[in-house]
Length: 399
Image (cartoon, rainbow, N blue to C red):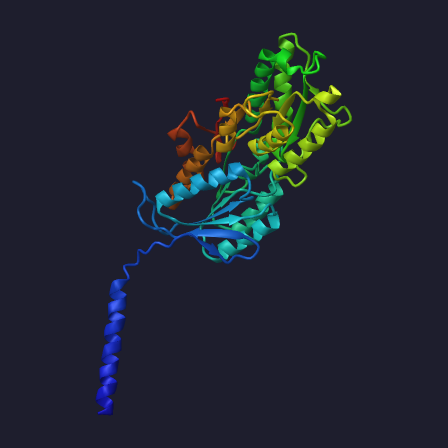
């Protein structure tokens, strides 16, 4: 009897195992979860269902590294890119580097060890070929798509670009000087049209404050330079004097986020301090505000609102930014902000996803970049002399 009972029990176990195996179809979708990554905030999506007309094979496993989640523009890119990767039906994981390059490098090492076969990287240390090379060495044979933050130092010749030093590398970003040129022209034309009402102390000149996002960032350098230079070109061509920086003791002509975060908090603190000394009561009010991004513009507007300005109905100090974030668009619509330059988060995400899809299908990065540029010639272009560098166009935004 004992042997019969044992055989019966074994038979039942075999049937249970068979039923469980039949019930697993191998296509289960996992919701995004927090991955246990040391020194990083990671979100994984293993959705391999067909959410687009042209999904890629499920062998593609993508790790996406953001310099910080707290940047409003980068958050917009992340939202758009997550949606694009979901539509492709690939496994992907997002990593928050929290503004720390060491944190990012450690996360990259972990991703490589975990079998990720495509890296999409928004570097923390911008404009550093050494940092980019270090990431490429960590990646080995794994292709890397850098985006948004420059991988070369300012002024590097195309032939010397890190993008020309490796086969498995690409970059999706913007032509750094373009935003500064567009913003400067926009500012110059606005000031020229509203000159007398902006000249609050009647001295015949317009005083401005400039907020720089990061001391070494190539985009920040050009926006700071051309935002003023191009505005001055418009003014002087019309017989008006150049803009005057509000603080004669600050020879740099800007205030910079010392943490390199392009943050609203940094701009708010600076502006609150500025307004305590430079105001209409002292007959030296700041009459124009120029910011490298919309985050910093929002911080300045918060300080102005607290001082009784830019409330949508009363006296407004013109504030200009870059990015055209949703919150900036709302401020413009409400009469609290004057203008911005659109850095297309959706366009950047779409380009990255298109290149990633091509990589998943076995296309070389150089060919993937070329095909993406050809898919929308008004939006995208390839940098001269660097076949794997894709530019996403800027555009002015005022309403």
